[in-house]
Image (tube, rainbow, N blue to C red; front, side):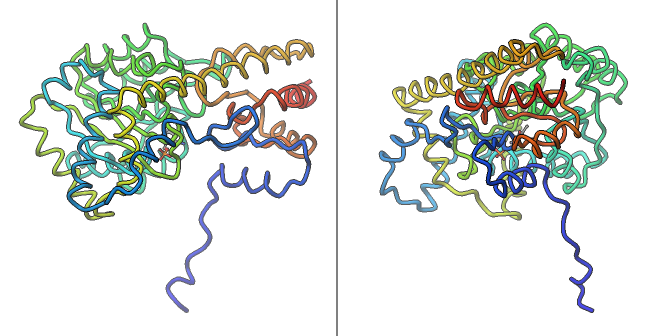
Length: 399
Ligand code: PMP
């Protein structure tokens, strides 16, 4: 037989499966709470006004090779200011080695490749649970993974003492992936005080923190507040890595705009690290596309467009927070027996509801409500129009 006869179908991504079932359902009441993409209160995808205006202003740009390099470095310069702070020492001293990446996924993969090249014996510690693709990314980059405890199903919050134990018990100098805000899938973030303790323990153990920043602005509505974990680590003089995505916070999903940055002890190291990251990228896809990155750098370097973006980001975050409150209130008004306080305690795009796989199946079968079997609700799919139907469906399946 042919060698590819041995190729069987790949395991379906859990989100793709949810979308397929949703699309196949003909009920007018159906709700898709699977996909982690923002929707407005009418359930429609959103193109931000700042993006439309930037689009108009770059129309007709010629994407020559020389333009591409300049756009890319301008983009990286503006992008890293968002995470580290525009007046931070690391930015002012030029200690950030940053490169454009294929959205958050590409930034993570590029880092994983870099990690294997330059620290071949290392592993990556991932939170339990985490975004499922983290496992695939480090696996395919041939970096072995370990997990550290994160979520506590009883409190539906953080298992902080277990997290700290796992940090303490990992070998010195381990790599840890941290979600700096709006943890996916749980919506559970450490408090400021807990971040300080985590940073302290990382210092003691000489661990390397890699921040996957996929939702900056979505937790609190404020870019700086959502970066506070990283700022705490900076204050403690950590060298960190960071993957940034503009998919969610600028609504640029398909444009694949991201940035990977690695802090260096001094500016002399920056050129080496950056050139190695570019070398790894060159063998995989040469260079990333330039259009989306030109949109982002146009927005970030224009004070009017940037403030428009900040307003629109706040609007998105506030709509989601409002829906958390309404969903919780609606369940409480129905006298739903379980405690639903975690709906508003959790932050960002997702609510880790605590619904069991059986309850999730029943919600789909009887109520046309679709979500992943871990009980993760994408709050972006909840609207003024469907929230009471949803509350009732959840109430009926959990009573
Ligand atoms: N990290 C996390 C935690 C995510 O949730 C996502 C998006 N689902 C990503 C990274 C990557 O997203 P993208 O590649 O679309 O930027």
